[in-house]
Image: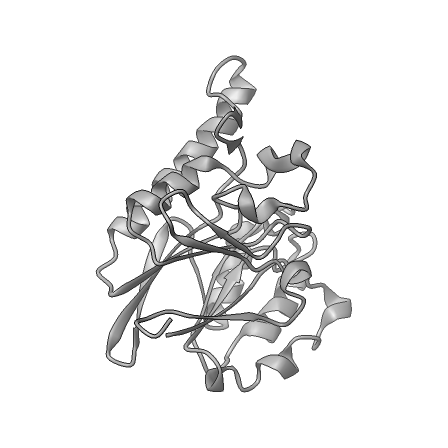
Length: 238
């Protein structure tokens, strides 16, 4: 199975048409394109229309999650509907299964959230604001768990915006790791038997990492991969 993925393209009206030429014959190179959030710059509908024009109606399925930038304008539901109207499946705590060469590829997606990693993470304790922050982290991770558990597939991918491990954040200031990902996502990925985890959000991170349980993790933020998409193989040959 050939997986193409990119995140953090941060499109606005000035970027219209910038990615489409590289995507026109996507089906020759990939069986699916995964979008790891932050498709827009400020979460505006006009920006989402640019994203829909770039990624919509391609010759391969396109599956997305939204990112924090896509939520900034408080129009995330409208953005998701607009993308869906252009054939882009948007996941948030749910999953989709695709047929690829006689096998089933399952993709579970959720935005995720921050909180940090083992030894240096936020605690569900204290002021209601802190408990709300960590509560959202826990709830998003549980939604990912439910989505993965719902899949009946030969190959399973976890698609998030926030990172499930600290390794792919190397290059970012350690002080902001708690705002770039959380260990709860990584725990779910290990517990649910995922074959590949894809995320974005960390512009100055690195591309490759592995969960404690051995699952491959890839940071596909465009400033990291420096291309219209990165490609990964899944299956016996990979």
